[in-house]
Image (cartoon, rainbow over all chains, first blue to last red; front, side, top):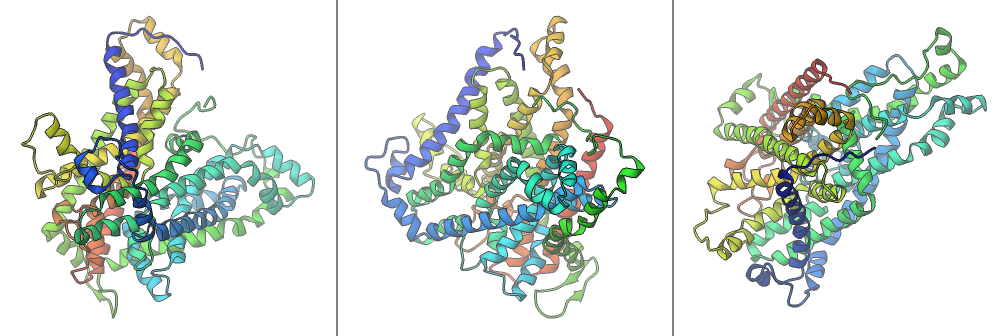
Length: 279
Length: 319
């Protein structure tokens, strides 16, 4: 893309510092959270801007063990990996068939899936709770995983359909000439080609489910996820007094993996999210 | 990026016209036989987790039920009872504020940032930084927000440092919801900034050159080139914003006043109302009313989606 020099007025002298100030505020916020998690709660309140006097790493141990963030991380990881893989395994073949097989009812089926994008959690949670209660899936990580999987299908299918459409037809025809059936063609040729799309979807869903709160709160009672641990800890602070430094250690445990993922895969994440809006 | 030429129109899946013979070739026949095994596993899970519960909720909203025992037909009673409930009306107004008020602020900020960043050096970095907060789960942002506005939180410390000692009580009944609205604005602005920037990047530079030659000012360039060509993206974004904003839940949840309880009713929205009717720790479950509230959210979502489709179809400016 050719860059053209535009005439710049005086306005630029104002807008550029404003823009950088906003950027700096965002960066400082992250740094401030991390530094606060290494102070004592008292120091956090008295010297919010200072460098920590001593690094209190034990905040993290307290958070991990006694505030149950460790258990939360374990369950959240299990949930995002399990539901992410299951969702892709289900949605990818469906998206492929719907975008490529030229079956007359493809349009109706696709529309049925896309409708799901507009179904809010509030219209689903009571029947799901009642039904899962009867079959023993309440307070079970597997039950929650099933919900995340099902609720992720419309979005995954929506993005993957567009992705499969962009792949060339000639490959499938060549595979067919070599005697490959549709199943073989899909699993061995088309799916590997769609790898980058699949990774994007997996990452986007993982980010979404890492801090999911509504269904977790409805479905789990004794088990915990990372967001539930955070929530429960804010609730116990009403009795035990403020332990903000431990809470902030919990925040860092929640945010740090996202930050690392973002630094490694930032462009993919940004493009994946904006792609959904411009098609 | 270079391949995005036409926004708002989908390209046909086939590159070549499909002749009558091609549909019936063994190649296509073999694939059509695989349609059900490919599509129906996903369809089954989707129907089970999303569609069936939604249909059941529609039915439930017309009945009285506490989760056990027989259901009692109630007709539209749940709906009329709900609209008479002052808490529901507060939830309605609050939901409106979140969807429309925060939405307007988010879009204004995103536009502002798009203009600010349009040809700034280091814009990729700036964009990446501004985007990050929207990846962070709402519950984390709201916990931090609550801390900042605590009576001895950072905001008050800062104000004291610059000599302001008479500040409002941020988290008192009347102010809490406003503080929450501001927090939600900050949480969401990043995504839309990034999407708007991507849309601006797709506008061909020739249009700006032409405007330049005609002597258009910076404002005129925005008004007559940038804005009209972003209309599609903006309308898609506004639907997705509404759909997302209607579901806002955890940002409110964290602001509960006492342990094990829900937040004060004056900050409830539809999602909180629905949850509370079903699972309120100190009340009896009323699944019928909770379901009715869920149906209202569903109807509003559907209405918004239909509206947006119509807007989209009417003016599809392509470039």
